[in-house]
Length: 143
Image 1 (cartoon, rainbow, N blue to C red):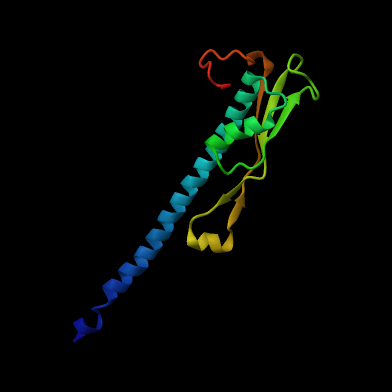
Image 2: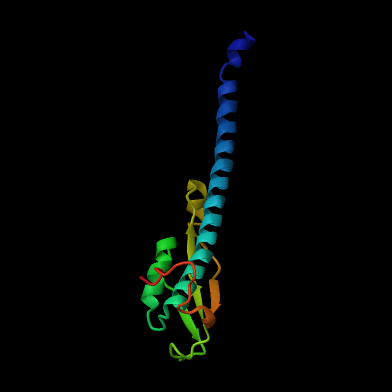
């Protein structure tokens, strides 16, 4: 008689355990995606600054953005600031490339309902002028 009353208990316990396991698994996957996005944003600023410095594009902010979007398509705006301000290609000392306003979208259905977008911090990279038009590793970066 006792056996008949406990036949579904194992199935219920498995279902509850599976829900908890899947929540942890989705959390780990979401966190890994966030770290990947964070790293890609930092690499995109490095690549954008390198392109701006090597290719000497003091007025070509759209080209820098296009290079950065190749690494991280979520980037919508980029700030390119030459130092000192208002310099020409001959007088610039360096460039700072920055990304702000980048948001991360969770894929977890539970987290998406409560916090759909998580703002990420700003990312910025500065490179000095001394490497302009002198890239020993690649002659094709500006093409």
